[in-house]
Length: 222
Image (cartoon, rainbow, N blue to C red; front, top):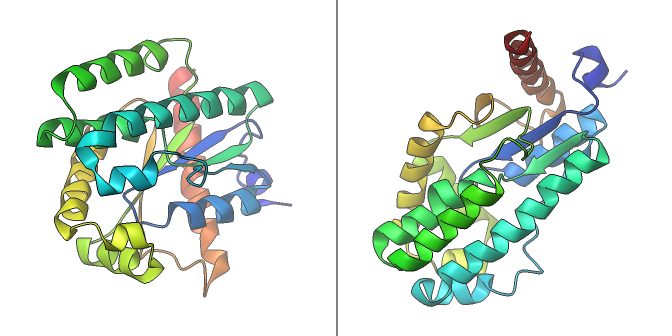
């Protein structure tokens, strides 16, 4: 019996993992999918033609990057639900507009016209009754020091070359964003409350909390 059966999590559920860079979204996504016998929907970075350019010149490439992400995440969200669910997703479509695009608009690295175009497109594509939303959004969180240490530890060059002020601001914006997010049920998980490397069984604690969120959502609908 896998954990989805043990905790009565629907086989067509879609669970999305969100959180700032370095929080461990991909690791948790893979561990949850294995524990639940679900498929994964991982963030695609290698095929992004704008990412490296973006880190070198935010102002020049921020709009292009966000449009690319919006299109890719929209297609992936549709694919998961058309397949019939049973997915754990690495990063949500909502973070792009609520955090990244807004941050660049506020800082002036995305023009007002580009930001307006982007948000209009996002609302037309995503914020409609016809667009399927996840059953649960897991927000990974921890102290700023822990997040910065994780970014440093994984050693991606384009991240190492990014000023620390960028990561600090992103961290603060994530906290503000998740505090106001109400599109689907939210489960906030501290990255220090589990250890998937040294204690793989700690994933069950998270699964039990996911089941509670889904059950609460089901009761509200009834």
